[in-house]
Structures are given as C-alpha cells and as structure tokens.
Length: 178
Image (cartoon, rainbow, N blue to C red):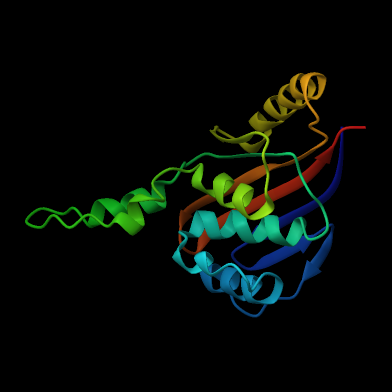
C-alpha cells in the first residue's frame, strides 16, 4: 500500500500534498470558499452539515483526477454537532424537529455524499474511533481482504472531525495497492 495524495484541512488552513493552498475565509466560510473554487456544480453542498461539507470538499480537491474504489472515514465525535442542532429543534414546549437536520444525524452521510458524487460502488464505511491512528489497521485489513476478492485498487481514507461549525479538521489520503 502507498499513499499517493493527501489533504489536510483545519479551520484556517488547507495543505494539499505538502503545499499550502491560500484561502481568505476561515471556518465554515472557508469550506464554502473551497467549494466555489474547486467544485461549483453540486448545489446539494449548501444543504449539507459542516461534517459533510468538510469531507466532501476535501474529497473533491483530492480526487480531481483520481477514481477510488472505496471510501473509509472515521472520527471521534460521530455527528455530535448536528445531533445537538437537531436536538435544539425539539426543545421543551415546542416540537418541530427539522427533517433537514435529521438527515445529517448519522456520520456516514459524508461517505455517502462522496460515493454518490464520485460514483463509488465499492465499500463506504464510517467508523467512530478514539484517535486517527486507530483507523490504520482497519484500512489495512479492508484492503488486504477486499483486494483478494475484488477489484479494489484505490481507497479514499482518513479522519474527518467536526464538533462545532468552526472547529474541525480533516486528513484524507488516497491509498493505492501496489
């Protein structure tokens, strides 16, 4: 296995394959700036929660010229930011749950958004783990098992964490089997 490309996004910076991408905005506004600069043709982006926006934009920048066979992501907080937003729509004395927020109360929605956009028909998995390093054995096991029984050659894998709209980080990489 070898990593061919990687991207890291924090609320104030973007680093693609070791090179800093200059951005003007910060936080969630930076994700919109990146979307407008690199994607522009997926209007559903504006309905997404921050976790999905983060993973989607990172994947789009990273996968510009690459097709992957699977998407494997993880974080520690699942979809806690959106869970809290949804819970706020069900407060005492009023009960108006938001269907738009409910959709994003599952962290695996981000893997689905990437798979839909990139036509990934292989595995899409989202794990809730203690730390990013805990994902490595899962990726290795998945690739070695799947590579023996399928055409899985490339995987988009990484950590996508978002606990608040302007408090997030992502580190995604394309892993090739060779």
